[in-house]
Image (cartoon, rainbow, N blue to C red; front, side, top):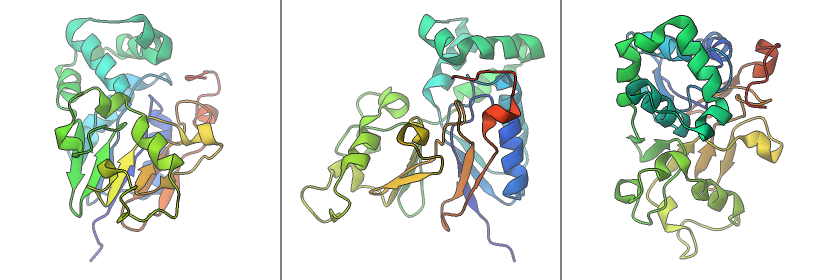
Length: 244
């Protein structure tokens, strides 16, 4: 009997073609549990189509959808008509165009999708999934600033800067990292460090491999750490700039 996999996905940013490639390359079936780390929109020209694909996927298998900062902005726009210059500058314009082109702007299922996104998810064996980070030394549940779940970069910066020989039992080991065996995040592209594959620092795994820019889209098996990647997403949308 085939063992059920749990696969975690990095930031998609409207790159539906890359997501479809991953489904094929990872040979995803309805038996797999899929965890998405957020930022489904804002980048390539298929943001609304990406959300529709995810909605349909969740009808047939277990899917967990985390909220990213771009999803926060898009959700507010769909619900309230609220926009802002920062969102427009960072991919919101292409997302609006996608929703108007497809007609999904009036699809209630899309509003519900954004409303129901999780700030974080804790899987068995103390594995934490969230888009960006948290700052509380008492753990993600004790976070005082909700926006840190989808905007914080200090968790990842802390993990990157740590002495790799520092043991978890050390008093110097960051307290907020001690609560979890593994933490999976997106938000900060690994290509910022010249790496186009998932990065593991301390007990933090960064799965955002720059799909919005000049990188690839990635999904990873949380047990085996085997991962699959799309082509460089820009090559799948040759006439677009994405967020470059």
